[in-house]
Image 1: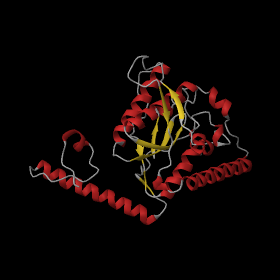
Image 2: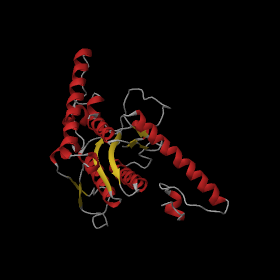
Image 3: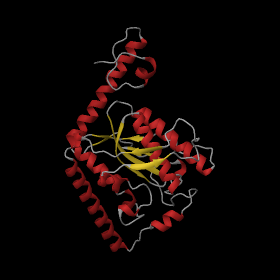
Image 4: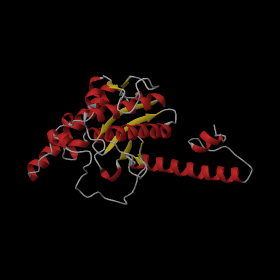
Length: 282
């Protein structure tokens, strides 16, 4: 699951039509360019969550290209020149098991509901990726003409196809679990609002917000930045152990490389493989 926030928590991804189209267009173009399978995305006002499958080890280039295009499109739309994204790095979370992927799909889909913005997932005025996923239809996008030139190399239109990989199991079962999870979260949030008297902000108020605004709530700082999400304790420990083994093998290979006796780097080495062409272990 990929997450990135806007600078100063500003609503620079405010869900208006031009932004919705530009975000989906840039995501679709980057996913096709780098062979990324997009399962689900949620474009909130000041951040996004995207669940994806990286089959070819290109997620680093995908992130850079996607976030660069979105930043340039939005700056052109709003007449800005400064950075659009927060200076902290994107959060890329490894989802270990199928159950963990489904948990994050539910999390991504219900984000506007849990944040007290709308009562139902489909009320959110941003991209209706959840509806497109259930209906098995692509999201049709047009090239954002406020940034890209008419006769440039970018496609005039592109489709964002949301997929359920075979690795997760039967599509109907995955979507059934996702639908049940969405219903459960919506019901729980409704129960909490009834108990506290709290109301949602509502679709109309969200649309009226300015992109210059930001939330008034306090955002926790200096928390842990997890790299692995797993419901099963042992699966999580195994994934963390694999990460540790990779770091050990990488440091050993790097020391040997600097010492003039190169040995293959472990699978997953990106920068030195991409730029320098170091050997990778089979």
